[in-house]
Length: 500
Ligand SMILES: *Cc1c(COP(=O)(O)O)cnc(C)c1O
Image (cartoon, rainbow, N blue to C red; front, side):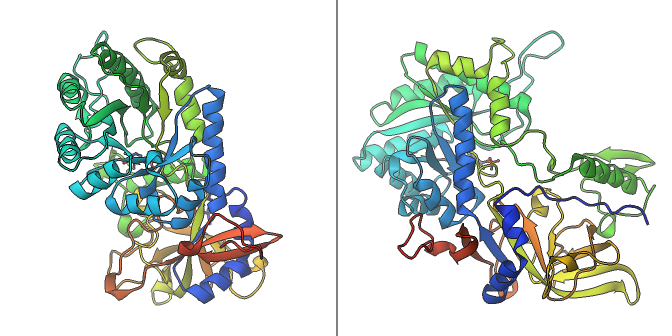
């Protein structure tokens, strides 16, 4: 048999120590059911510190706004609320997230309201003194109207832009749009109208800067957009506005895999499987967007680049050190010279290593009576753990039932299909054949690592009246793990030493 096609997760402390404590994780699942989400609030604070270190090394001011939409958790939001107000705020994209942020200890001046907004969301954001990242000129009109009608305080606004154009040059048509089309933001080519509208509404809103969020990890697009915004802020200034902050959104990425070679090997094997050179690697020969057209590989794999050279704070550092294509100077130097605040809105990367999702093995059987691949049915469905939905491919960690960790290894590795508990053909935890060090047994637990960003509760449903996963926060104190329900976590220590 060829070597198993593992995709080993990247695990750092303290998540690694948590995974090593199989009996503790089993006891949580036994008490609270499967699936179960486990969060490490301490880690989000450590990730914040890493982002702040990048700010310091570039001598930049401004805030890190956590993109709340990545996770519904209270523990994570409250943990961040306890950090330095000048260092961290929160990006909320709905009325519910705004209320949650306020109730978790964020004051209005630390809140950035983004995304599509209804009047109630705009009203509350304005009422509490949040900054509003304007999605469109229509939204500006609507906000200004609310401020006047209800006598609200003047609102700080950032104008969100989209449709950045590539630098022009020989062989490059001037109108080539560099960033992919976005539903959000005012197209850069409408900047003239934007300045006029902001001037017109200065009684109701205070334009404090520009914003963008490019939903990509592609650095070239981001470098270009950042430089173009600095130039546009000069333009706004020449028109009498006084923008002073640039919000470059999120999308700094996460490295999910420990080993670049495994990722290379797996993606090469996928290409070969799609071409029919080797047996399928996926359920029903699914190609993740690749297809075989007469012996030629076509399409593009819709997969997250799960092994990353630099991600999160490291990615931000690289971006700030890069030079813009027009002025040819490092972006951090441009920001510094203009005295602009830099705001970032990391979601996925701020919750890197902050949690895992546990699922108990409910059934193990072969697809065809006594041969064919194994099906491993979990007490969870594809909505409970949606890494697959985001194209993130990574192996779960097998936590054996009953005995010590030594039983995680077996006579030989095995490829299995992980299927969910819904009465639905499409309910696959992943379409990929997953290699495990041994065949799982009923009662074992599989731990999916690094699910706190979008994979934990973003897609969870009550389909078939199945309960959604409970979420707990854990902390290590005096050599042992303590846990509490996510909603009961507060970032204080009780006299007896337990979190909350
Ligand atoms: C989703 C989103 C983010 C966070 O993106 P990540 O890729 O999770 O870092 C930031 N800002 C806005 C406006 C968003 O919509």
